[in-house]
Image (cartoon, rainbow, N blue to C red; front, side):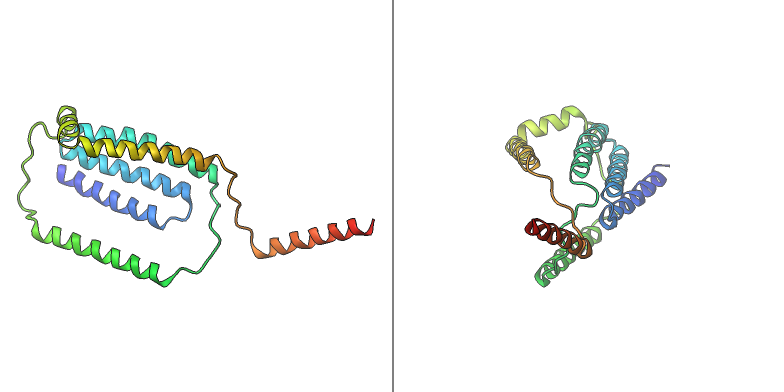
Length: 191
């Protein structure tokens, strides 16, 4: 039964991750991200890591998704950067990065033995084990991440307090508005 759940959760994680990337509507992309986070929590449960699965749902699917939805609602679903030509170096850099990730995945899968299960300690993923590792071995990295999140929260408040970004207006609407402005200025000059 666990194998069937693993395959279903893995397929859902991959499908929802692809939906996040290819979806143009930000609200639907956020819902797909929520599905991805739930699929990952299911995979954590299969690894008998109950605490990490609960943290995945509470922190990421709860708090972080609420923040994403607030940003999407603030900016608006149709606020886009005007169309500009992408530079070729950006396309080349993206292809190189994607190729490097594919090579890394191929090497990791090729070197692993999928026929035997990995040994997992009984305390793996328990709140006590996670807290002990965070506050002993990785305390510097833990504090650095908390400082980074504080700076990101302050930057979000500062950036969010400015004027709302303007929406992209198509060329025809811009010309009509310019004609109205010109007619209004000529009417003002005639008086």
